[in-house]
Image (cartoon, rainbow, N blue to C red; front, side, top):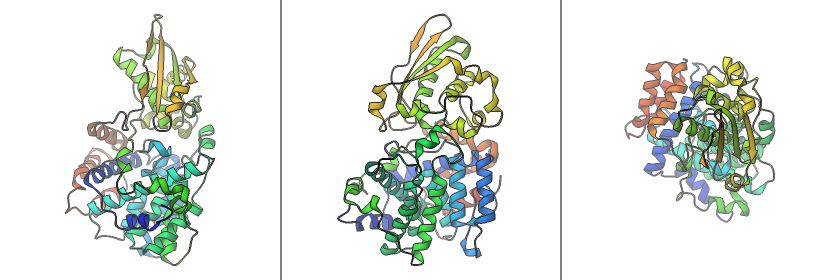
Length: 445
C-alpha cells in the first residue's frame, strides 16, 4: 500500500460494492440501529446526547444533523460523538475478530449525520458508503495492531472510517481525503483497551471520541486544514493490510452479537447455554461451573456489577445471569438487574481459568469450554465452543430480527420497530431513498 496510496483514496471515493457486501451492510445497519434504540435510556447515552445539544450545537442550520432516536439536533461532530457513545455503551453491536473491536458503532451514526445534507442520497448509495467505511476501518485497525505495542480501543482507528464517510458524501478531492485521513489518525484516541477492561466505565471502546475526531477531520480538510500522512494507510509496514482492498470484503466477516456484553464472554455463554438446553437444566441443577477460556476473556470483571459498564464487561455476572434466567438481554445488564440477589447467589459457583488452547486461536476466533458439576454428582462438558454470530457459528437472519425486536421494541414500540425492520430489504431496492430510513430514525421515541 505504501507504494501506491492512491489505491486506497480511489477506493474510498469511488468503490463499487458487490451485492453480498451491500446486503451485509444493510443487515449490520439495522442491527446497529436496534442496539442504538436499546441504549437510548442508559445514563451514558442520555449524558452524551444532552452534552452534544448543549456544547456541540451547529453555528448555522445547514451544519445541523439529528441525533438518533432523540428528536433534537447537534452539529455533525456532536451527533457522531453522542450517537457512537450511545451505541458503544450497550455492548451488543457488531465487530470484526482480527481487530478485536467494532466498526459499526462509529460509522452508522456518521452516515446519518453526513447524509442529512444529502436528500438526493439513495439507500443503495448509502449502503455502498457504509460498506466502504467498514473496509477502511478493518484495515486501519489491522495495521495499527500490527505496528504498535499497546492494544488500542476501536476509536483509534474507526476515526479513519468516519473521515472516509464524510469525504465521500461531501465530494472531497483525493488531496482533501488524504489530509482528512491524516488528521483522523493523528488525533484518533489511542486509549488502552485493557484499562477499560480492568475498570469498566462509560468510556467503553473509545468509539464516541473516534467518531467525533473522524467527523471533524473530514470537515476540517474540506476547509483546507492539513494533516500528517496516515501511517496506518501509507507506511510500508501497513501495505499488506491494504493489498486486498476491493477483492476481500471484510464486512462479510463481521460478527453480530446475540448478547449485549463483551464478546470475550460469548463463547463461555454459548457453551453454558448449550449444556443447559441439551440436558434440560436450570440453575438449581448446577453446583459448579468451570470455564476454560483465553486470557482476555478471563480478565473480564469477576464481581457483581455496580454499573451497566461493569455488567457489560463481565464474565461471571453474565454466566450467572444466563444460569438464572436462560438469557442475557438489555434488561439484565441495567437497573434492577444489577442488584438481583438470585444472580449474586450464583457467582461463587463459577470459576474461570486460562486455557492455552484458546489463547492459541485468539483473536481470529473466540473459543471456550465449560464443565458443569451437577448437584447429583454428574459432570458435563461442552467441549470447545465458538462464540456465535460470526463465520464460525453465524446467526440466522431470523435470529438477528428477533434480537432487533428485543433491543428496539421496549424503546420504540412494536409499530415503529416493525417499520424499521421492514427497511432491511427495502434499502436494497434501487428506487429507495435513504431519507426514508433517516426519518424513521431521527424522531424521539
